[in-house]
Length: 263
Image (cartoon, rainbow, N blue to C red):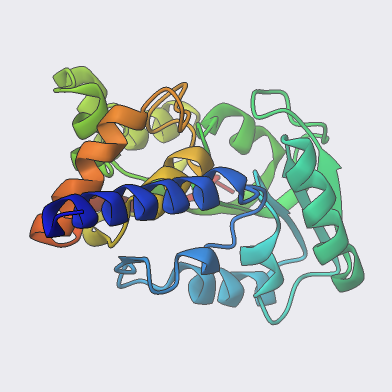
């Protein structure tokens, strides 16, 4: 076997191993420790979990919408006496329940779309980290007068370098559908006063194709219908690109939202 043939065989074996591992790893919860050493993402300057914790310490009743596996809420040092979280995906409901119940938080299985299964004015603090869609009218309904919505949303054109690598150029409407000014307008239309709204773009690096495949399996809305089998040829091209030029670089987009229901 020539050295080139040996190199090709070694690369093919590494590619298969990386994809097999990415395809076999469970995707429940929002624990991203699997990416350690394989992918990196800069964090927003505002420190969402820390800032959320400060608001939790002063709240009477809180609701965490779309909690995932409960990891972010579990990291808050003090929760109010009444602490509730919702989640739609059954594997995450089970994971969040196991994590949050011992901490005194009730986990409610609830769909992502309205209505929330709570009475009007039930919570003085509603939080969410990366909701699929922020339903501001429903958030306003469950907030007490003077209550606060504090959240970190996915911003416009987040990780679009990766999206467009697999799907090709996206229309401007798609790139802008999480624009912060649109979210401001939606919050204000629901009767909320926007106190703070800011967006940051943050560097991401994927060091191997397995990290890319697992990311797209976990964050399913990036490339709808993504499977390792369906995108294997494109993944092989990406594997070779990373081997030749280094990490695949993309940029996430994050928006901090704080809004208040008028007293």
